[in-house]
Amino acid sequence: MALADRIQAAQRSMTLVNSDPEAGVPAGDRAKRPTLRDPFADLKKVVHAQLVTALGPKLYDVNMTASELEVQVRAALQTAIATTDQPMSGADRTRITQEIADDILGYGPLEPLLRDPDLTEVMVNSATDIFVERNGKLTRVDAVFSDEAHLRRTIDKIVGKIGRRVDEVSPMVDARLPDGSRVNAIIPPLALDGSKLTIRKFSEDPYTVEDLISFDTLSRESATLLEACVKGRLNILVSGGTGAGKTTTLNVLSSFIPEDERIVTIEDAAELRLHQEHVLRLESRPANIEGKGAVHIRDLVRNSLRMRPDRIVVGEIRDASALDMLQAMNTGHDGSISTVHANTPRDALARVETMVMMAGMELPVRAIREQAASAIDLIIQQTRLKDGTRRITAISEIVGMEGDIITMQDVFLFDYSAGFDEHGRARGHLKSTGLRPRFLDRLADHNVFVDPAVFAMGAYR
Image (cartoon, rainbow, N blue to C red):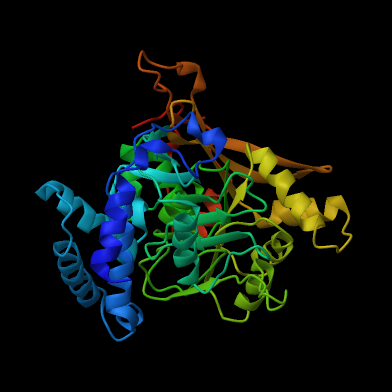
């Protein structure tokens, strides 16, 4: 069919959009969404198809830069839209051009959301139901995909760029965007009401310790201590729930590592952005379509020990790799940093213990705890509070063993007793408990010293 005929057919179909404005939308979503439909939806499909046909292989030319491709796409768009006789205002023409360009060059209706620096998370519950997180609060946005197929194409584009796949055989996938933003997708048959896509956005300009202090995530005194702990080569575990900001804190801690050290980072999906000169980034790999070729975090931790690392930074410990991480910390690879999902520092130790048992080595519980007490020096607990803010709520030192129990002492604690203000924002801050940590002598052995004023009772700046 010629382009003009296809456009006329699209225009005729647009006169019928009010007959069933929610066609194709799951029943559970119809009550959530407005009944209005983009009057140019069918026209955009036609122009999009024409554009793909016109550019063809150029869209996948590896020798063409992103800027060159964008120029050609926008030029072809202007030509395709100019051939239509659909009446539209200049604003509508600009909007349609931008939306089609986003779909071809980027991720369709997600592009404006990904460009918004105030959003921290994008959650696609279905093709017509998209939520975002702004300032720690969830809100629905008006952006929609054309249909389920449009959403699936976008998911395939994201995961395909890093060599991963998502299909009925492997319906779950973890991936990342070029800027390091974390992506999770799950599709039918596991997702009953259509594909789900969750994107944890990272700032284009990575947060620094000064940013975290300004956000009140931690105090200046605690930041001074954490910087000394990293430079003094203590083994640190960042603990917290989902979305508490563990990876951001891990990135900030890693920025304290001296420039002259060799750093190996190990992650499921590469998110860390270290600016040191000597960084080696490793990423796990899922199994192929035949169920073979998987490379797990544990394999990478073991391999990293042969790469002469000064530091090992593991994005997250979530399985039997905990045993290898403890072994590395106990065999000269001090200064390692990682994260773990847990609600309290004590729970973090219990989770590490459980994950070591997953290695199948049948070690006695006391032996595991002795390994953990010897390997881990500091646990940083991070929490997302009721007001949506992300705060470090405890910095706890591992002291040693008393019988079969790992002993700890809190160096900094969040003041929950301060309550909330009239806007529902937490009044509390991270304050010193007044206890002097025992590892200060170890820091001195590395020529790292901490001002005693940092540990003054209730100190906060």
